[in-house]
Image (tube, rainbow, N blue to C red; front, side, top):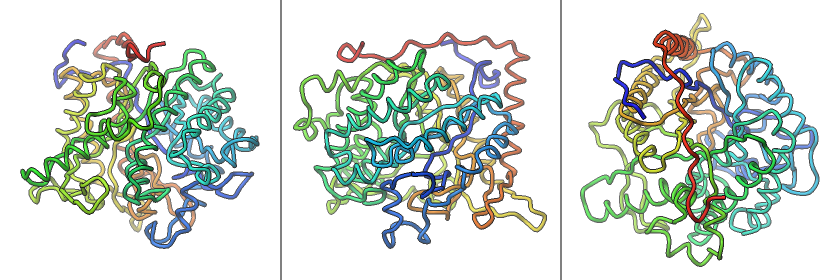
Length: 469
């Protein structure tokens, strides 16, 4: 790829978008036949979600999707990344189909297309049907088949209109937090369950790729990974070992088998008991793009009391000013990660999540000022531009998030949206950051057009000798 200067125009075909996830925005938790998910169940457990929040109403996107699509169009972006709620279309995870749920996604996709917005559908964003969890969930090898059947159902219904697909969102987050640390559903702290879930999710990904290839003509298929550099809190040998193990779980346990047909060295022996003949070929099916969710670096410290011997540590005291959630701001780490993804996996990269959590309420005139979010977005998009100039094959960027929404264990206490949602009235109010993003995208497109930037040739899909089809 040709090197660009830092002042060069954005590529002409660069994709700008916004993201959400089903459980975080849809609400309608007991409407039209939707089944219970593992997160519905977790929200009923005392102390698991801040302020006893739940996704039962959330942003009520299920009923207000037309208003939300109009807001997306008003931003001037190209694409909307959303997820399908597995329990909305298959209330028990398998078996009886809920036509009302599929009808909702058809209406959403149709409205997006009518408004000139590309639908980017993610098949799984953390909301496993509770009925399947009762059968072992991702610790059961059968889960790969359950997922493939679900993917086939959705692909048959939407594949004539949706070309862009992600199999999963952030494998590493919900396996580590859900099976080893009790920070996410299903809330286990079990080493064996964690290892089994890692392998079965990788299998499910490969099965999902097969289904999409077979059922969706010209499907553009990827997977979304949360990748962030892991740094030891101190130079001690123990903290360096902790950082290496966290890196294996967080950054390598999924893209390495999916794109290189191998598990990272620190995990391979532990996972091997569940690997059968042909598994790695199934896992490493050809894909077309890699999604990156990135916010800032992670700092690790040794903690022998935990399952894997590591714990999250604090960023150094002299770190850049951080938002309320306590996540450090290191745009250079973002730039470096984009370059590393291009070097390591040789796939087009789409930034599928990037943003900042901050509580910003309307003032007495109803205006929502969020200067810290704007400063964050300015800094990180500048770092992305630097990465492209240095050779990173970045093809698109999606802000997290379109709407203030349910943020898992944080409930509604740490909103990321560029559009404010009053959770009493559900009124939507674009923040200053929404207006900034609209102007930014318009300027980027104008600059690319005036510069006469040429479209890039699509990169070859990643494959391995074991996994190529």
